[in-house]
Image 1 (cartoon, rainbow, N blue to C red):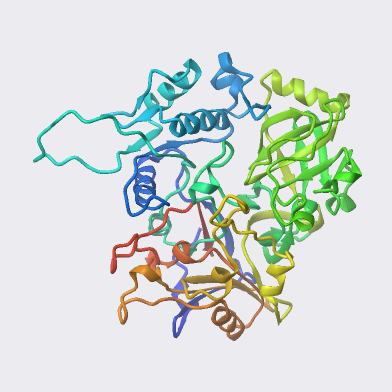
Image 2: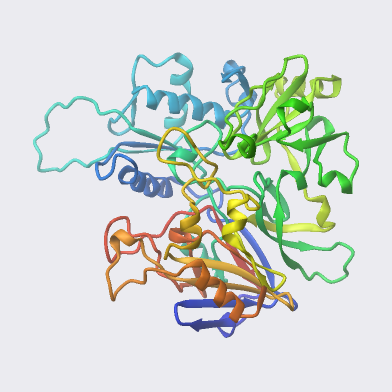
Length: 538
């Protein structure tokens, strides 16, 4: 790793924009990794996020008590809670210990059973023994943080007060952290990438945690999250037939149709597009029409959306002896169900397979406590994926501008924001409306690829409008202005990265943009916690 390469020579400034050129035709390497290593105590980050969510929410500007719990991945119920194996959520047998913990703790908070106490939260005696066992284990295991929703003052006279109930439960990916800390440690060019779970509406089911990447994600050559919805992805890949180690960058429109996956017991399933490049035993159609009665399928929340105009929360009905359904989040099976009508994870998908002997072996494997790992491939690329993230929308394609508004309207890029009522929950990121994607002035960052294969990162600073100070802050830029800058820099392909409060670009450990978030404190930028960091090395 050559950290002494002068990256500032690749840095340019034009009006509001900072731009960094990464010459992939040389020896540059581009990839991403999680911000916080697993051995670091995540509780300071959990406290920071909990404090923000204590203020931010539909109860604002009032404060609310928040209970944050770190949810490490790939923990099995059969190993962590053997005595309680067999817990179900909406008739789905849970395999994941994190899903079971989230289900029980969410229910306890919603039912007013978790109360603010010092030094640790208190669980009401009305809680059942399973919830109490999980609660005690989580709290004693130093995996939790309680934000009381207001602080005591030493000058106040202590007086008995009625117990205050916790209002929000936050499952947290412990690998999330501050991009600035990683940039200062590595001294490499560092920037943010794809979208991630952040709003409470996105983690109010047992299967998601704050900080989970949304859609395709690949780190260090392993795909650990699949392309759930059809969106543009930045893919860094290497052709194994090439003798050089040079990687290539490309922008790909990917969905579950492009995915190949392997479940335990050597069960291989491919989307219909991926099956053209291999011959798996099972070929799954994505969200087939209910009338087709397909026994092998992938289902996500857009099942039936084009026909009915609303997202789906469950798979179509099917008899128990007809099929088996497996709920998949990230790269693990979190639960399974006999028959149809399974809940579809908001940030995951369901695999429906025919009820035959090979599939029944998988069920018995899970019931016996066997691993629930899922491995992924993108067969059409014909190369090894080194790093990837779904981003978007696509802005430039083969030297021409995309009609982004039309792409969004026609669901070429699948983004469905939630509404403010109970009728449309949307798909994550649920707050990303077309106005925010296109017309809003905000901090923006994009990635482009030149004719010669160089990567260009360009970013402009912004500020949340409610805290904007004229002549001191930059309100931001529109997508049209971002596209013009990418064109000026010679990009022929380009896409937007996660913008707004997540937008960040560092060179030599120095941030080139002030964070756009202010958390309602004008003049004081507040850095957002993110799960992943892209970086370049030479």
